[in-house]
Length: 179
Ligand code: ADP
Image (cartoon, rainbow, N blue to C red; front, side, top):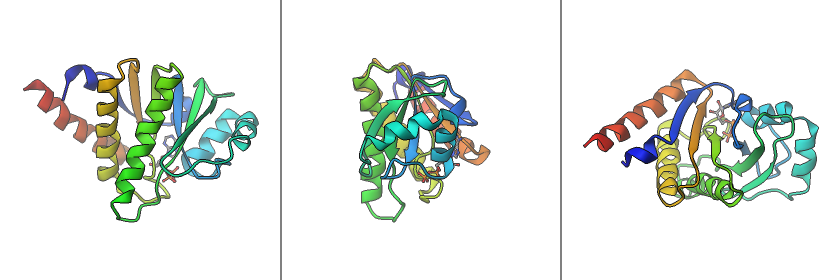
């Protein structure tokens, strides 16, 4: 893996709502009207203006993404994407790949240079973290290769266990880049 690409990726543990980036990505549901988990945390931290704007969007299909302002967040924007409910079928991979690719494309289209992702679908939606991590990182790396305008992508993991999975996967890529 290309070293310049890997250097644009950061792995961290904590609350994504606290990040000062151009956009944080929300693991939303198709209504875009709020929910539990990271979605609830983002709406609480952003304040009621976020829900008002989300109401104008008319929902979002699974695998796609929509952008709003960030309201009371330090982050300027929120990119709302809808991950698949894990089923074990091949379509899970296509849909989760779409979440990352479409979120990154929306960021590039809006001239955003830094964004942060949670582990989309890895909470209530039940996606196994190892498989989801590989999709998140591989999709991001291939997008960054053809879209150099994006300077920084943070994967913000809520649990130490998920952080370990991402760090282990990044180490395998770093090793390949040394060769
Ligand atoms: P999904 O419905 O897509 O599975 P969840 O919100 O249930 O979405 O979980 C997605 C991931 O986000 C989980 O790994 C969960 O631990 C994590 N998470 C929950 N709150 C936060 C937060 N404030 N910041 C970052 N990640 C969070």
